[in-house]
Image (cartoon, rainbow, N blue to C red):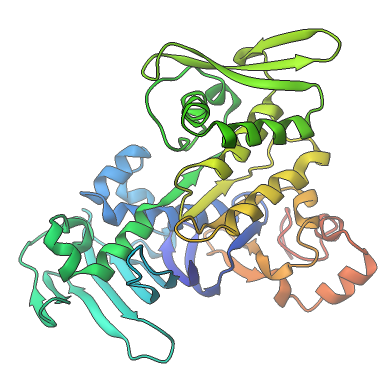
Length: 405
């Protein structure tokens, strides 16, 4: 998991330094404060492990010029993070990684610097596994214990993206372990009910950014893990007492498939996906994450409670908490944004898991602080009993909408 994170000059994040992160992290603040920029900056780390950063930009229909902070467009964009990873299946490579990477301030994309350090424990001395400065690249071959030079020039991605052969596993085990962790990042946008209810086909092991592939994902779960599918249905039935079953209809696993909702309140009724409510679809989608064969290593989520009845928002937060409690190889860390005071109420006993995001002036960079560090927290918790959300909406905790004096 990410233990500490610094980001500079990425969109609204002009200088975010040394944030201590937890397994579950909620971001609250007004529109335009930098919450989405924070999630995008985390997910952007995946871009360095594709064949080219340009591939990631094309997928999101971004241009390189969209990335730099407007006040610092001539400065490099940097990421700096400390990460603690469990060991792999062979019991190797667990420990603490420090990774820093930057995009150069040029018209065209270029990775200017990249460094990865590793130590097996806090007490051990760190080893530099990879160091890149411009066109100069060296890395540590664990098989020979020698520092070697990497020859490819003008590489538009991380050097680690070029590790492919079976021999690389013995030569660069920590680099591959770190790369696999970042490749497991998944970023979810606001889930669109129109997308969630669309017929879909193919073999999918996760949901798309806007909720794509829900029907084939559930069909695969029912086919390959019927007990897990039954657990998912039972969980939805507890939330919606009139629901009796959920099914997927369509052709074979490669044909078009669509969702069906079954109700039995006196007389059995079947609703097609177009007739299913937005709230049921969203709760079904977020709950399905618990039953993925491979849970994302880091999950970023825009307002997962959006469209859910206030009385059921606790269930959304509970699902996110359960995701973070999984053991290797399915350990997951979650970062999500919210505008809901009901969500904030769920963190009354864990204010250290809440980030307050603020931006006071035009073009000013986001300021991100943990709620547990606000001096007024103790007074507010006493005055508002168990409702942090009410105190936040009242403007007593900061990170609220409206101009600041």
